[in-house]
Length: 92
Image (cartoon, rainbow, N blue to C red; front, side):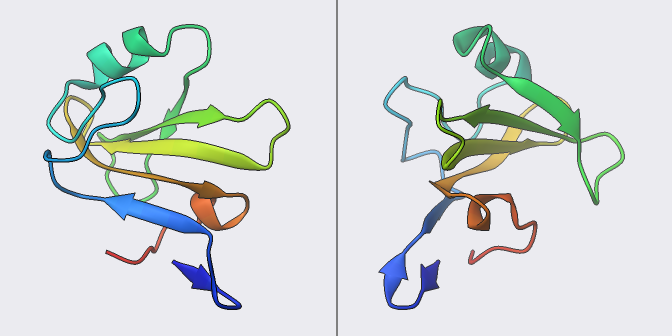
């Protein structure tokens, strides 16, 4: 996602790409929460009643990593600057 000609967010929807910690699309929600234990915030998905957002915020709150799940499996993830990383409709 671009804002004023700067990259502010990257969305990933394919398992070929992993986070630096190794999480990727297709992982179980449970494994992602365990991988980021103590940092992961789980909240309800806006459109999927069974789904969740698993969010990891930076210490300064200026950026985040957000996984979208169907309640069991990661369907996509995004990383970027706040507030753009929290926008539900993205750039995929």
